[in-house]
Length: 194
Image 1 (cartoon, rainbow, N blue to C red):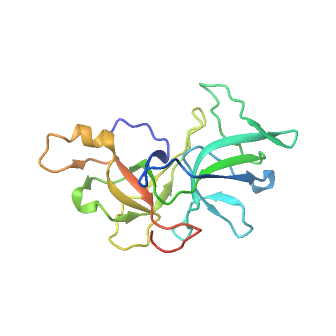
Image 2 (image 1 turned 180 degrees about the vertical axis):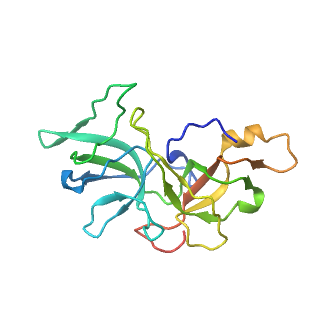
């Protein structure tokens, strides 16, 4: 079990060795959705971003940065920690920088005891409550890991911090909530397992 504070999906490395591939999307004030760093997002029917909330949503990527609109242009978010973190509040217009690379890996919490038997399996996103004080996502993975290829994210193994705590065990495992390293299993740009 990890001491990791919930923060959604945190990018850690690229399996291809390159930089994180990002794309910036405009967020409409009329969407009435709050956006947090670490949210897994999809494209809605209108082509606008929305957080992944159901198993039917196919991710486009993960939010790695947010900006507000000032004079029609992107501007840094203003926030006042420790009471108000950097996020786009409901009905606030802005821009979201999305990590869209299919080889990008993330650390995320999962509601399950993880063992080596879960490596390679897939899991769906669970939308937990975000932390408005830190501005970080409440997204995590659901506890059900499937050998099928239909989940949002594929489990590559325990997160590096979990491996450090289990290095003296005969098999790598972590108690719930565990931290795992994952990559997108499907993408809006390629709806086949990648």
